Amino acid sequence: MRIAMISEHASPLAALGGVDAGGQNAHVAELASALAADGHELRVYTRRDDPDLPVVTPVGERTEVVHVPAGPAAKLPKDALLPYMAEFASWMADDWRDYAPDVAHAHFWMSGLATVTAARRHDVPTVLTYHALGTVKRRHQGADDTSPAHRIGYERELGRVADRVIVQCQDEIQELVRLGVPRARMTLVPSGVNVERFRPDGPAAPRGERPRILSVGRLVPRKGFEDLIRVLPEVPDAELVIVGGPADTYGRHLLTLAEQCRVADRVRLAGAVPARDMPAWYRSADVVAATPWYEPFGLTPLEAMACGVPVVATAVGGLTDTVVDGVTGDLVPAHDPRGLGLTLRRLLGDPTRRLGYAAAAVDRAVHAYAWPQIAARMSAVYAGVAAIPAVMA
Ligand code: UDP
Image (tube, rainbow, N blue to C red; front, side):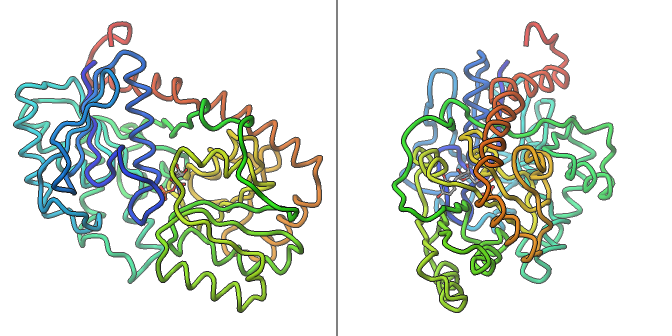
């Protein structure tokens, strides 16, 4: 099949670990690559945010990343991109005169707007993955939510006009049903993990004697790093290593908090790390802690599981699907410092339990989340909306 994939702010070629570059970039890159490996042809459309970027960058044999000129060729926060989506749609629709995709898969609601607009001109079937929802963001961030004013209304409408909505976890289904998107329009296909790269064997980042708790993510408050620093006094001896960027005022705030909690000697900010080095960081840890206040899917716990590392996670969003409580890791309620401290202390003090979790975690990652099978599920969805028999798709 010929697939157009649209990811307006999250380029599959971007460096990860910055404020607006994380899970969606990795997801789009991996999904595209797994679909191409399966014989599909892909064009991934993303906004041109640097004047030096060529319009088309070939990636591998059957994939091209297309940098769409829409708005200034400069980095902009994703919440500032809505005014450029009409231009994005019109450029892409012109491109489809020649490319003629069988299906267009939009990632994030703004891509959804551009995609349904362009798709109408050429009668292309559309698939939408939200990745994050305005209702959830508003609930947790309140006045700090910088999303454009009508995001929630757009998301509701897109859920009704896209030919198929891909949901990534059970929690997202509930949120969308509450929003007014009919359940029958949704298909659950979780994100995957690259189990060739994220595997238990291989080099590990250097470490000392202290038990290591690793936490990975963009340095933004909702990832819950502050909660981890606050409970560290309850977890004697352990060090907390935080991987992610950007290194700005929030990073300094975390270090000040560590001083106030008298654990500065046990907290280390490693900064943003290139994606290729991530497996080694996971392997260096005794436990990976993922303690966001909310999380649409959450790739980092899954990557840790694939590397054979037990996970302590907050029971929110996609984490309640990926982490099996008491089997591959421990789930704790969000904002429960007592529970979090106790769980980390207990797990770090119990090597047998960690070994059991590690083995089950690798097994679950490989059998339920490896990219080839996730891509196969996705191409079955594409074949369905494009009305192409699955054997030919
Ligand atoms: N990541 C990375 N370098 C970093 C921090 C994160 O490569 O310094 C990657 C990480 O391995 C994962 C992604 O960024 O693939 C983060 O995805 P997740 O779904 O956990 O969070 P999001 O950024 O989508 O909120």
